[in-house]
Length: 291
Image (tube, rainbow, N blue to C red; front, side, top):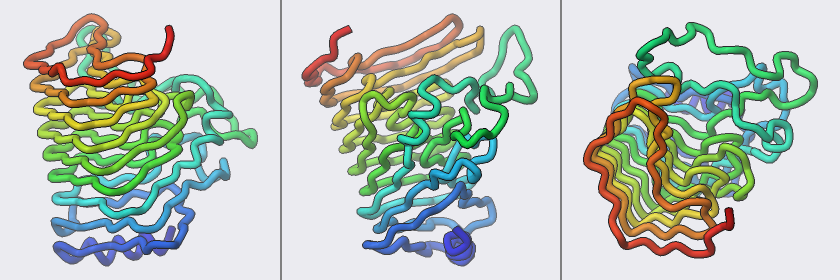
């Protein structure tokens, strides 16, 4: 991991630089943050090799929300023919249940209550040789502008494969996620408080929503996506625990769904605002799972 940190530190100093993960090499990398905000713009992370998450529980402490994280960057591209492997089977066996907490609570706006300053402790508060109950997202972007992800494969994530939080100008294309249909909570792509998002020409196989669009998202265009196995494409759930939730200008079209639990759906709780949602009719739905 020190080699990755050193390479990033060097790339961060030069505009339009490229950090290369070479082909035909496998790298075991622990939790790491590739951070701004003082990095130069338009950095390329060229992933041609394979990055694997460690399975030693000591690496994860009491649990982390993300494994590989890119934060507060302007013009960041991840591209290549490489693979990010989250070693998720270790987590799925140990924690085959929905996580007790999620960092979404940092961004939702409560109407009738105050969000706790400190989230509740995970169910397994003592390390006992097992993976912690909080499962990390494989690849997360936070607070970044003009983000592109293309070419790569993200597989076997402990939880969500690819997440965008508070990002503006996101393009995801010609990449894939791959996890078994029974892997718990393994969303393919998760959007939250992000706008101006384009997702197309992707193959998304997972154990939860192929694409999940949460509160604070606007101007999202999705087309030519293969989804399955998984739970389909979802907007929400919105308005949980009486929170304010706003989503607008979402378009989904030309999507193939196979082996999915649902098609395209909107999930709401109580209080929400949804505006300009377009779902076009060119869908192919195959091998629908029985309820």
